[in-house]
Length: 377
Image 1 (cartoon, rainbow, N blue to C red):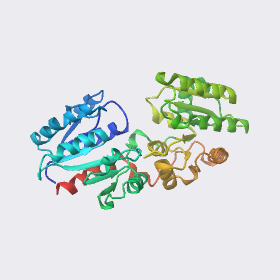
Image 2: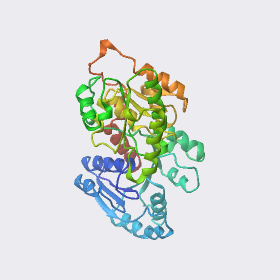
Image 3: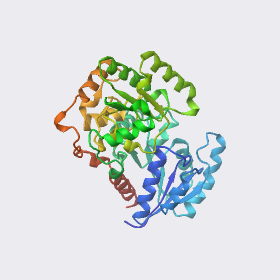
Image 4: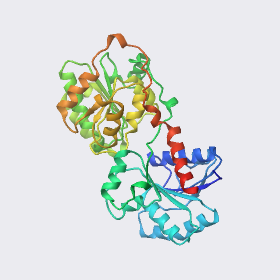
């Protein structure tokens, strides 16, 4: 394939899954000998992007204001001056700016790729994400969502490319991993003891199902288990009222001494290793379930509501962990089954999951570059 210039558009480069995917594809482009440009309002990830050999152009194309349309002309000039081959849009407002910029470029304009990262509310505004000449869907759940809500979309333009992880960052850990558990307990004494440790990573928002996890912990402890629960990411200074609500519920359930509500951890793989069961209890269906892939890569079972991308992954990779959404009794029963002691296997290293190869970073990068090649050729 000839050397391409690929321009990715998104609101900013601060944090999040969209931003991470943008950097990962930019890195893959550079390593393959292509030119990678990212257009955004900037952010803390710009130095990391530039360190990979990619380029950043600052245009505020994600501000939710009509004034953002003033960026159409500068973006069109940029695409023309840089001889862009592909424009890859990842968010709705930047996508509209990109589509309008391309509209005035004639027959030699760059080809358009879009990635649908989330299950946004269906609308004419959101429909722009289905207008790419190739539409990347991060799961079959997203593909079905696009075809259901935008039935005029040609299925032949859709490409399912799951998000990927770097396996070396999530290595298998012995079960139980006593050193990792001791590390967690040293930071958060409530996580000590010999009982099982449950882990629910996720930001402090009601959508992540923290209350469901608290009730599950209460049920396990009522049944005689010395279970503990760690929720890294739940404690957020910007959401103090929500944290207080969770702490009140924990006291009412009598489990506050077996609970750690903490800020996010920079050592999430070690947190997986410290745990015996990882929870994914989002109340709203998600487009993808990265937690499921990360935890299984570390050799930890996952328990979650069987809807959206999480349910899709669980049905494929670990059916025993999929529970009908919001059935608390079934969740408790399934948790007991997944936590049942296996004396013969205690302390052994879990075997690599045979189906996880589809969900590696390398697989995601190569599949995306193949989409660019389809259009470039």
